[in-house]
Image 1: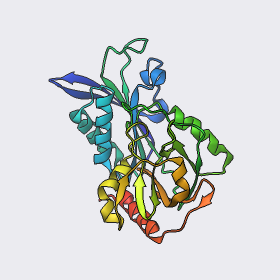
Image 2: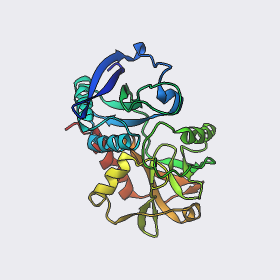
Image 3: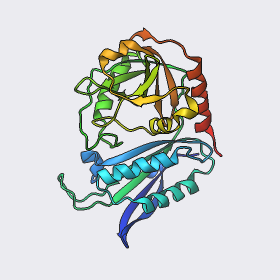
Image 4: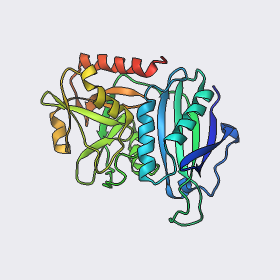
Length: 288
């Protein structure tokens, strides 16, 4: 399927948001200089796995989009999202790959202050990335700022992740663990994390920074279906990492990926974790 872009402009009508939709071939689309995303990162994004035209985790993506829209004060409600989803379904057909959704505040003049809360939505399709059996994780020198208002929201201002990812150019690690400015473990540059300490699984809280990943939400809600023991949302600091026996990263595109090396230390292999990885991969590949 050839990549496409669509621009949807929301308008208030009868108390709810309506979308005007224009579709472009990717090569023909151009972003205006008068774009608040380019000037101020004033927007949201979602990166979704698609299998045979089906988005397995759409419900969780939809809820995160709506939460982000409420935080950023966008006119982007359930009716608008439903219109968007219908048009996406029409265009995807049997597509398998990655779908990216950008929700941007409309231009309303120069300066930080906004005169409108209407949005444009841009959509693009991409091939699946290479999905590996396991990864090595190092430690990022870049710390995540704490901002409770934006914590969990997948907003466009991802400069910390961009800077941290430069460390990966050395090829020493597949991904990097990111701490916040108080030393708490939050996430990697592109995924959430779960670690096993003292026979108990934990994942860091995301109340002050980080992205509330859709796969993380899915696993927390379906944990008993996949894992034999409980899981807790619990603060984890850098000093706790030497006690980790197993771990994995997760996101909505690559699924669950076991960690084979953490900060240069090999972690124990876990056949149960490998089986769960395969089960999650099957779920993401389902087009039922």
